[in-house]
Amino acid sequence: MDKDKIKEGVRLILEGVGEDLNREGLIDTPSRVARMYEEIFEGLHKKSADEINAFFTVEENNRVIVKDIEFYSMCEHHLLPFYGKAHVAYIPSEKKVTGLSKIARLVTMASKKPQLQEKMTEEIKKGLEEKISCEGVLVVVEGEHMCMTMRGIKSKGSTTVTIGASGVFKENISLRDETLRLMGM
Image (cartoon, rainbow, N blue to C red):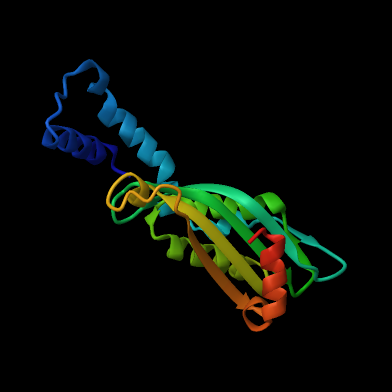
């Protein structure tokens, strides 16, 4: 990440909107934004599936659901935040599961880049499928998009829901519906 380019870009934006770069509150803003972008765009240079790095053997291939995983991301169209909760379910096919915190880490890393919510949902699903042999994966992402609430249509409180399903969750409607109910959908 090129912090100097980010700082220069922030300076240009501030000048472009008519701000005084020497105003007390703005003097260090370009540096602060550069440090912030390094943190919130960390996922650009990492493979989110690599967060799935601990595995455990279980007796049966039972469904695993981790819900209400908070995330914060950025809309690639307006560079405004969208945030919400992700819910992830999978059924292992080889009696191998991952640590629950690894699923939360997968969601977090997948969210740390400018993107569409639809792509983030798919990245989470594919990341789990890549690391664990699964009978199926179901990912539901609920997000509030600041590009819809603070500008444009100004639709406060609207939520976008995206769903990614594979394997038995795509084929077996009753299993998918039951899992969605368990997720609170």
